[in-house]
Structure formats: C-alpha cells, structure tokens
Image (cartoon, rainbow, N blue to C red; front, side):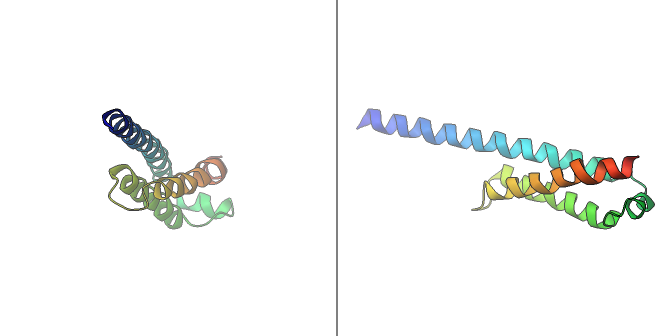
Length: 102
C-alpha cells in the first residue's frame, strides 16, 4: 500500500505542476494581448471594421483575469478558465491586432 500511495502522490503533484504551467502560459498570452491592445488608436478599430477598442480592452482584460484565476487555482474551473482566456486573447492577436496595426 505504501508504494501505491507514493505513486499517487507523485501523479497528483505532476498534475498540479502541469496544470499550473499551462495556466501560466495562458496568462502570458493574455497579458501580451492586453499590452498590445492598450496603445492602439481607437479609430483604427473602426477603419478595420472591428469592434471598438473598449470592447477589445474588456475582452483582453477579462482574459487576463480568467487566466489569473486559473493560475491561482482558486476556482473549480481550473482548466476551463485558462483555455477560455487563451482563446479570447488569441482571437485578438491573430485577427484584430494585425488589422489595426497596418
């Protein structure tokens, strides 16, 4: 029984650290998206036919909060929040940011 419990403890620790690393990576992506959104000119969003700058600041800021909650592990949705945050941030980084940067 002792070997089984030590293996189980190792698996639980490994799961925690893998989940934490994933949530931290999602947090970095969300912070990068927010930082890239802040200095953009608000008129560029209208010119590129994207939503307003306030909308994207809210989306990327919300992504930072969700990723932070996932990284801290303070919610029962430990893996869903960072995934949602990464999706929100990546939509901005891959679609909106190139359109408003030109």
